[in-house]
Length: 222
Ligand code: CA
Image (cartoon, rainbow, N blue to C red):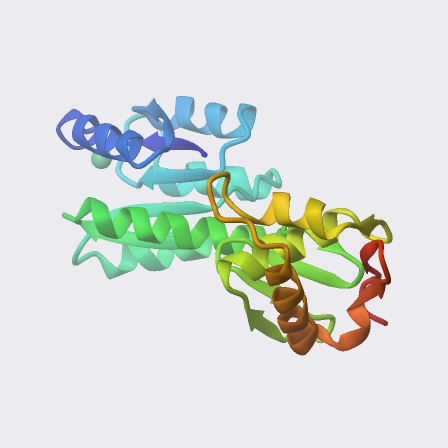
């Protein structure tokens, strides 16, 4: 996950960058508006954290230029806590979220994660196959009518294996290898139990049984 941090205050950006890197983000830092605008357009960031009060070009102007040029990278703006007019201007310029200074890094991180989730949902980046879609973040399957079903970890891995191999016969042995951790006591009879649960959630016809061979994911009728 690559993130652009735009902040001119070293006292804030140095520890913030460290904390974000600890959270697994690859962080690039820009300290003024012109450079920030250039970097945001040149590099495919997953997220941008944008301070509004910047040297050379204001954060609002940078954001307007990004959006005007078709750059849709999710942006969270950092504003003074009591400056409601900054937040309004930020949203009008195309911000996706904001955080008032001072803030806790934990809050910034959960807001960034929520932004990533939303942007993936909008782009439909989840695995799609046979009319179903997997939402990895929420461990859910999305049906053609957009209804969502929660899945357990094993059900999720099993369904993903099927969806990646649509219309192919998968033996119980092969499914067991894909679904369980290495050292797990592999009982291939359990696969039948999990397939029954998937059929209960998705419809009986979604996974067909081939006697003596295994199972086939055929998808849902749309
Ligand atoms: Ca500033």
